[in-house]
Length: 357
Ligand SMILES: Nc1ncnc2c1ncn2[C@@H]1O[C@H](COP(=O)(O)OP(=O)(O)OP(=O)(O)O)[C@@H](O)[C@H]1O
Ligand SMILES: Cc1ncc(C[n+]2csc(CCOP(=O)(O)O)c2C)c(N)n1
Ligand SMILES: [Mg+2]
Ligand SMILES: [Mg+2]
Ligand SMILES: [Mg+2]
Image 1 (cartoon, rainbow, N blue to C red):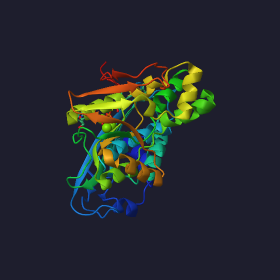
Image 2 (image 1 turned 45 degrees about the vertical axis):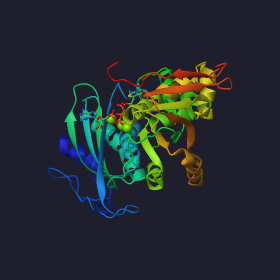
Image 3 (image 1 turned 90 degrees about the vertical axis):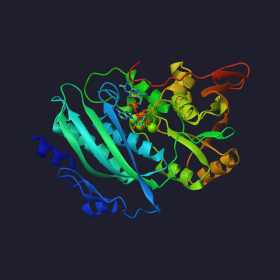
């Protein structure tokens, strides 16, 4: 099958033209470039707007391997990671451009399954696939997705606006993806397809799901933008500590996190107990959580939490900001589940997933 037949196999008939037009796609797959309408009416978005654009890449052996992900999961997660960056700006994702570099060992049918997952994610978040690129690759599969979206002009949520005395929050549990990866890599792998989630045991099922199918919340980003009290926001791709450091450096202050308030999912606690591992390492440094860490005016932290509760969305207040040299600290307490004995302030390393470590 040639390149063009492959692209048709992966993309043809997946999204109705009319629906794509409603997401701003004037001309989609098939010409030299896509044509997008920057002013297409979008529910909930009024007034002048800006385009919000992000690209993230997934590379076989770095972001996934034959054991950790099914083909469908690779496509789903490649798009979800980008939706997460749009959400972390308070934006609404609209269109995607998808680049795949495919090794010979990876036939067009497997890429079609990758697209099954990618289109499932696109449907979940209302993203129109408007184009892309296809190349061969000497050895490993590479998927790069660009997502374009819209946000009210001048109102995007950045990493830079945090003020001393703000509350620090996170919009979902952290550490589950890293624990899921740990569970998957612990299984023997005979080389025939990905490890079935069931093989990892009951405690790990939710963790494997968190690793394979991250669930960024565009709704959470929109609520935070509309509320007007969120001063900084960042999605957690490289780990909570690393993303907290990014806010600290961008805003020029310190983030002080309380260990006992960090959201520890029951499934993570159970798996870590069975594995004899402290979950805190995964929670702070694991990454690929695609929840959001942010700061908000202290007096609005509880009302925001209540607003999220009413919307059925998680929201955990995990600390405060302080004036000072940019940095991140953890308050570990006697009652902390890490087994620490007294209240201590521990500086958190600026460490997370590092591609060049
Ligand atoms: N090769 C590059 N060329 C130009 N800009 C880049 C390049 N790589 C990253 N950037 C820019 O650097 C900034 C930080 O990128 P980074 O990828 O660390 O953010 P992220 O996508 O939120 O994190 P992650 O990749 O871990 O999900 C972004 O503004 C991004 O557009
Ligand atoms: C097989 C395998 N080994 C390790 C990892 C862990 N991992 C890879 S990239 C990354 C950070 C986010 O990437 P980026 O910064 O590119 O968005 C993490 C935590 C994995 N997912 N699969
Ligand atoms: Mg990136
Ligand atoms: Mg990000
Ligand atoms: Mg990213």
